[in-house]
Length: 103
Image (tube, rainbow, N blue to C red; front, top):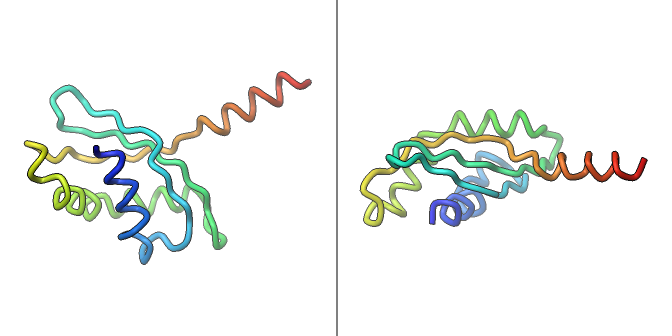
């Protein structure tokens, strides 16, 4: 539920902040006590920005993202968890494995 809502927030509501870059929520892992949600994002930068710069921008806007998530899921979750964002590098890892196997 959080993964779907966060993806929708990035697509629809965060365009003024993040620009035209494509950001996909690939996984969400929540601690057993529901206090922290670790959100893994895949970033395809457009417009001359880098992945690291966009991830830093997302982390700067964590409070706003949590507020937006709370507005969507406030009735369904007892606690809106703290959000931690991480860069999902599984595609880079797979590409590296493929390159090594081809050698």
